[in-house]
Length: 216
Image (cartoon, rainbow, N blue to C red; front, side):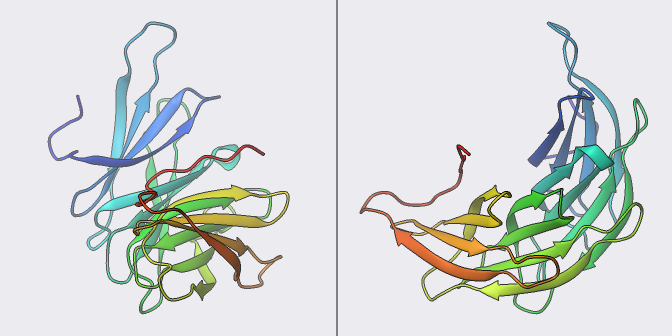
């Protein structure tokens, strides 16, 4: 059980090698809570938490760069914000590193994918149409920064789920629409902006794509 104020854990990431998970709360401001997974049959244990800054509210998406000990959380705000959090070594609690505010119209980044090798993360917005926003993760304790974005086509709205094929430089975003759509996005080499490649509209009844997995 989490502590008072650590309510509605909406998004999460895991560092399975280190044995910890991190939960972002749907609170104002958001909090990131660190949990020790527990070895074998041992119960999980709360390690600590960080309370984010004013306005960094309602954490709905998260991606992790476990090798460099950072995670990135997206806010359900207008415009969206992406907050970089240091995971904290061992039993140390997480800490806030910095944040970037997205551009006008880039609201509610509710899905995210990450390419740790290239140093970029990508967030899909819950807007009409959706945007895919490219974020430079920042080296070390440098704050993240916005690189650019692509607005998708009419009807490609509410990008609630996403998966990545990093070896091909492609992302796939699922819509919370009826029927659902899956949009393929070229993530852009280096600092190039992402671009829309194409989409498929699913059958009647195959609606509201709230989750996604990829077999690479």
